[in-house]
Every structure is written in structure tokens, then in C-alpha cells.
Image (cartoon, rainbow, N blue to C red):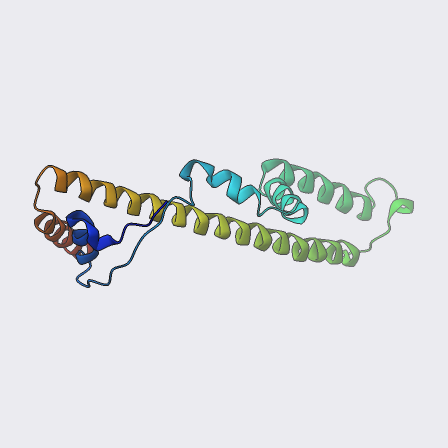
Length: 169
């Protein structure tokens, strides 16, 4: 398929001029299918990422809180001698419990950061898909407007003014 230079039609020339700089840039959006964003993101997943997501999801649930409340309650009751002195294994101030909880916090923080990094990568991918879809819509809209004899420069100026005004508020 032969490439059409942006200045070969009046609508493309208008698109090229919208940013105030005529530079003859050609946009090729055929490489991206917006509906396939999930497929593209799934290809970025690794087993470790999935494990981190599952752990983070569980750690952010009420079940996690309930399990820990029960676990801490049993630990303290056992080591306070409520079920017999012979069952004590971690004397007050519960140094072993403190160490275990600290290690758990370190690992959970790491899992949360791994999950956040993946979510950030997914947001970046979605932003790119949105940008490309918006750019494709702009090109189609300008061409349709040109075919309907709409003053593309006038509409572009109105959009630019509206955007500038919205940024002030």
C-alpha cells in the first residue's frame, strides 16, 4: 500500500497545520487495534507478576484482617499463659511475633510495589491506546469536515481556545 503524503490532500494539510507547525508528519495508526489493549497487556505479564497481584489482592481484603486478628489473638493468649504456662513459647514483649510481622510487612510492601508498577505500565498502555484512538478520530473528523466544506482552521482555533480556557479553571 502506498503511503499518502499529508500535504497531498487539503484535509491532511489542515491537520499538519493545526499545531502551528507545518512539518509534513505522517501518522500511521494501522499497527494498533484499540480493542486489543487487554491482549497487549496480557503479553507483558509474567508468573511473578500474577503471584504479586494475587498476594496484594488478598492482603488488601478483610479476610486478611480477620485472619491476622485471630492469629494475633491466639498468639497473645498462648504466650500470656491463658491456655497454660507450658504452651508459652514467645515471652512478652513477643519478640518472635514482632520479627515475623516485620518480615511479613517487608514482603507485603514489595508485593504492593510490584503490583503498582504493573498497574502503572497498564495505565501507560491505556494512555497510549487512548492517544492513538483520539489521533485517529481527529484525522477522520478533519477529513469529514473538509468533505462537508467546514472551515477546519476555524474549528481548530475554537477547540484551541476552549482547551486554553478550560485549563484556566
